[in-house]
Length: 212
Image 1: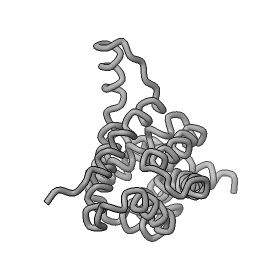
Image 2: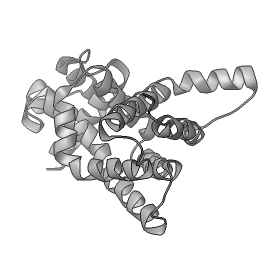
Image 3: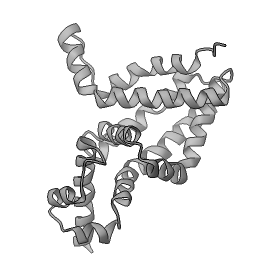
Image 4: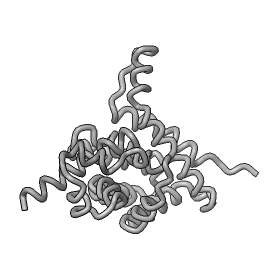
């Protein structure tokens, strides 16, 4: 049993790294098995398919992040029923940073993986996330909507889509951005500082009144 668990973990670790670096489409099962030093039969035994492996890689993060984020949102709204968008978005910072305790650079890796799914139009991932974590997503969308009641639901759909795109782009290029900030402006940012820096921008974009 210990051997099986170790093999499964090696496959997940190898797949996670390759998916984040190369993307889902460009990473073959053969490449994953080579990096994990296992055979293809092991992947089929533990996961059944590449799609299931992709979902398992994301689930390691989502199983930690989603409940923590939901608890944080419920807590802030319990303390202040008129919580601002800044308050709502800020509740996600600690759950995101907690992913670093799962593995080195977990926060960045998780957001890179989300970005890969977002950019590569992995429809099965959207189904997986909405099916398995829909309760948490609905709680987040309601909290954001309640904090910006002047934004119609259809418009909020687009704004949250743009929000995700902004976060994905920022995190995917965070290394380059922090290097530029340090070289050109003498400013040093760690991952938490980058996340907190983007929050006011997101809040302003989501809340700006609809023009007709």
